[in-house]
Image (cartoon, rainbow, N blue to C red; front, side):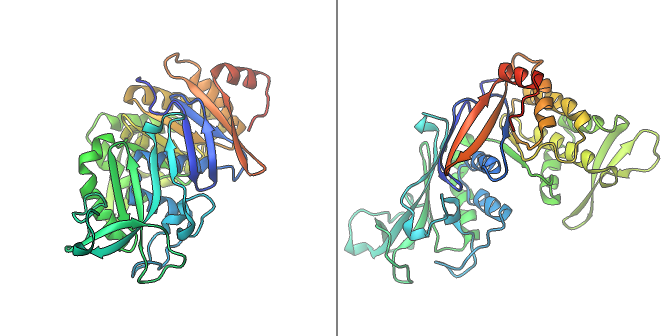
Length: 384
């Protein structure tokens, strides 16, 4: 496996994090900590970075937090982009940018900031951004836009709020007075030339994959060698699993059926318990994260502690072959022990556990590499 995409991580001004720094990451990473210390937020930050700050990823993050949209600067209810910024400030009060990247490597950072634009007649100002290239297109003919300071109070005649996304040579400005669906379509058109710098990324939430995501991943796996990885994952719990297929029952409704040794008829996977569904999701996600990153929130959900070592060994084996860097979260000490057992056997795949703590409003991290983890497990020391 090649060098991990993230050998460290530094985040500024993103959601709960004013600032957090993780100085060491490995090929397989497990985030530990109490509730509400930002474990899931770390996964969201990694997904945002991998997807170059796309509007679709922003919407996914906000939808996952059940943060409804508001009618503010446009005519439709759109995602509250400002909720991504630390402490959820009012849009007019955002002065610092979100920064996500490797520690001490500003060239690796994804930056999101708020800019304010004022539209002026083309005859009234020289310069500006009349062709739309600097500000993501969508600029009306005969007008230019100049950047100004934030208003004291926003109104229909004030400057236009925009989200500025920067990564490397890429700079895109998305006007927040437009319908969000239009921003998403324009983003997809404009970033075609930058897709080579995006990172393949698959996220598995605490509840697993929903039907829509499952269908997307299925299309990438069916009729490929990766399908066997998914079967191997399910065999950790059900060794009799022989094959599977995704049946489209109705529009937007699918059902996963298994062919099981000794059973004449296909078996719906949902009848076989949460563990099978969880392992199916892990297998599909790993197969589709080739040369990228896999994010798994509460990886132990639905899986009995006795098979967790085999789950981690499977993850390590497939991640190594497909060149996937894995980031997972857990609340379980059994999962931590299994993580140490599953990652210790391969000298080319380093496992790192990161404990996150929050004290007096500040975040700190502690790194447990394979050597320290071996001591922790042997001495039965609680580090969650």
